[in-house]
Length: 206
Image 1: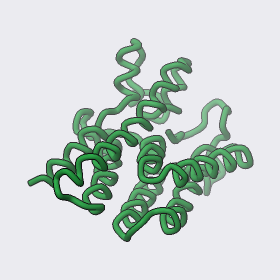
Image 2: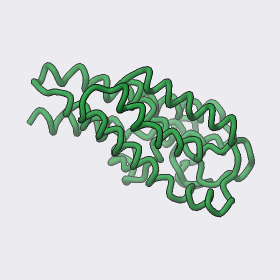
Image 3: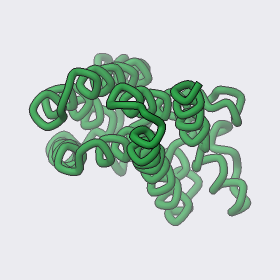
Image 4: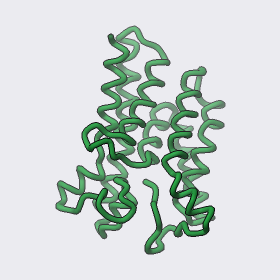
């Protein structure tokens, strides 16, 4: 019973949508009702409140880190191994994308995935953040930068994470991120995906 409880706890942590929580606390509109309808920091920024967007970004990244960090602490005490931690990382991602607290309407998972990867291996998380920042500087398209970082994640995991369980978990998380960016991919193929800082950027990522 220890494993299901631990994994479900990670899912519940992931289900805390800071875009919705921060917006409600600051008296802003529900981010699921405007812009790209995505409950993420970039969409919250469309409200014009930079503080709310920053808090959303930090909150979503922190919950990803916290869920995995707690799993890393609890697993050995419960007689569980790397598989449990890897499953918790995946459950946190699923919680963010399909949160039980918010009618299963979640975000795309970029910030939460960053927090998860930082907890699994700080160098991997920082390396992928650097990939995103570099691509954002070069192509100035948030979604494309996130997609490239997601494609690089399994490569980083192969070299920096011990064991098959972690590698597989990162592969699945990367695949989920790509799937959640389906509309962005269509926009890129059609040349309609806006650039960072450009008004009306469609379906932005977190």
